Image 1 (cartoon, protein in one colour):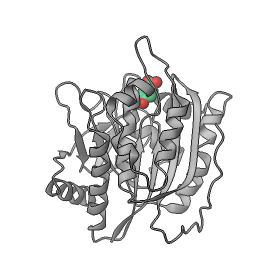
Image 2: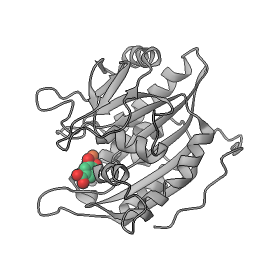
Image 3: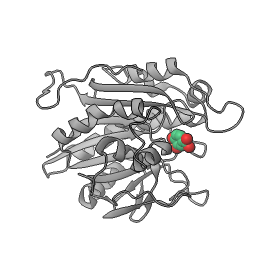
Image 4: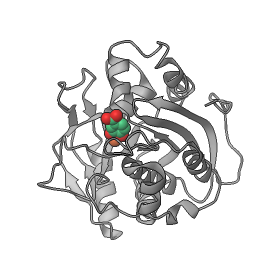
Length: 297
Ligand code: DHB
Ligand code: FE
């Protein structure tokens, strides 16, 4: 049986992809950002996930105003990095897992989540930057990836509660897949950021850190945070954080934190990163990974 073994959340700031690709990730500016991912890169080498369900948003690379799916799942074999204006990043193509992806699509749709099915698309920084942060420079990504795209660009995005419920439905779908697979769910985007207008550069450390706190343990209060609060408190692009709730919903009633990182600034934004385990009350098996200390801001 396939199992969801962990959840990972991370900002996906495109500048991090540039810094990574140009070898600037240990300089004075980017060093403290990338250092917060060192623990996770080692942990991922030990965890060896077979598949990552990677929740992200496209930034007008695959979808534009012509078509705006609220929730879409990639069922294809392969996805190339998108050309975002500077040319596509020179990172490996992403390999899908069509059997599991079609199984999840069927399960979700019969579970009354009306997913858009994608067989062909390119994937932008929303998906490739988290892969670089978690796996570093590699000739091939070490696992299969099922892209799960969420519309958080054009109003109205889905509610936090709907995102959380989608995560719960993904967990049911994965649990009913007969093959033995180690599956992680990642949520990307955030944290506070506003890229344009008079409030550009808005950062709300307190709200961001309360959000990180709220993903750990058994509380479900984040399900009910209204869109207007994300916009008011964290800027217009802070709404990307609803995607983290899909990851959280997929981990079940209670989570335990393995690693946490928060840093300002990164470009015009705050970056956040969290690694969680489902916590079924039986205690965590930390063999081979070890709990990480709380990373300093
Ligand atoms: C930027 C773009 C993003 O999509 C994001 O999530 C954060 C920052 C940017 O252009 O700086
Ligand atoms: Fe984004």
